[in-house]
Amino acid sequence: MSRCSEEQASNFHLVNDGIYKNLSGVSEPYATRASVCYRITTNNVRFIELQFQKRKNILKFFLRTKTGDLSAPKGIELETVPLSHGWGAGVNFRLNPEDIENKKYTIDDVLVLIERSFNACM
Image (cartoon, rainbow, N blue to C red; front, top):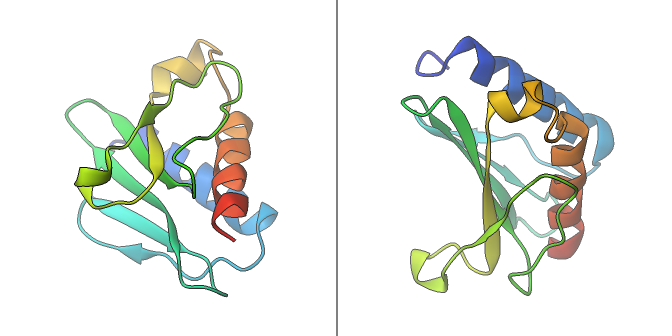
């Protein structure tokens, strides 16, 4: 994670720990230089791709769903991912450290959204 800021690394570790604490059946993440992917163990479906965007100091999440729709907790703005992106039906959002500092949403809200994606892909 040499390509990310301290804030990104801290938020990533909070999210990563929350995924393994709250969801059973998630395989070890697959990491590249700029992203981390999580799969469901039972059906091998990739339900999260997380990208580190250093220039903007954010973490960008792609969350897969079966319908392309996911209800978001307060404060999290979702964008529908076009099917032409090759990701399948899903949404994305950006985790901005400033939004967490300003209490627009919390890491727990992010984890709720991740759990909804996980359940939608089961």
